[in-house]
Length: 54
Image (cartoon, rainbow, N blue to C red; front, side, top):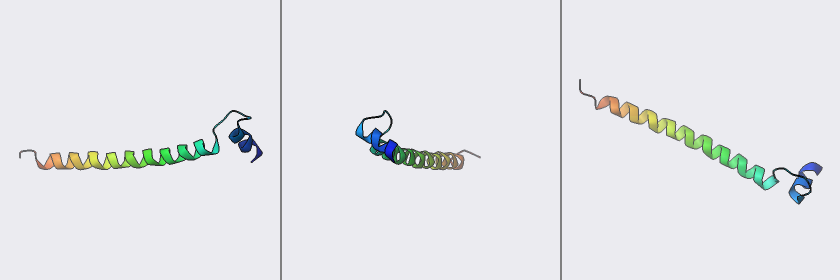
């Protein structure tokens, strides 16, 4: 794209191709970490239920 080339060259303001690529990678990593945290949260809650006195 001509517009993206202008941004990459610093002629026009905006996110460069490398910045866009980094944002995509970081968003994917964030989504994965959020899913992993949810799994761990549920596992901890499940484990806590087993240790409750009956």
